[in-house]
Length: 135
Image (tube, rainbow, N blue to C red; front, top):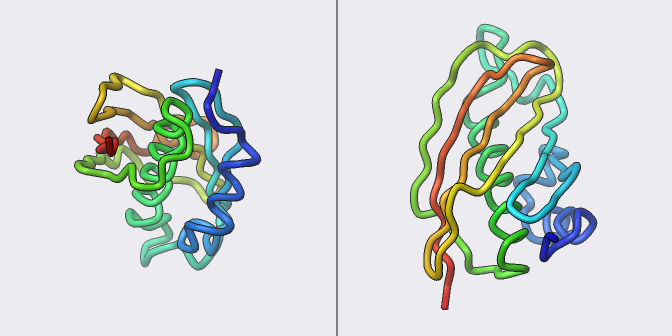
């Protein structure tokens, strides 16, 4: 069972993550060690060439990792990203992006996650990251 609800995380976005709120990002579902987030398609997130920008995909992946961590440890505001890697696999279509995150390993001080980002049915990016968990 998740230690935070979808509603609670969406309130965190609204009140504490203005960069995510500005992009209309929201959590769709959460369970212990898993989260699904959506980044609605907006023309303002498109880079020259017609692709959704890499920074927007990175923002979505990192927010999804944060949700995954909080699903495991509860609302701990000082849980922060310590490493992040992303591979862009193909150009997204002009549609919403869906991020599916899951825990790989959680310990006392670190949590390691992965996130797959989809545009319609196709995977467009894969990210891994580590979060530091404060004592």
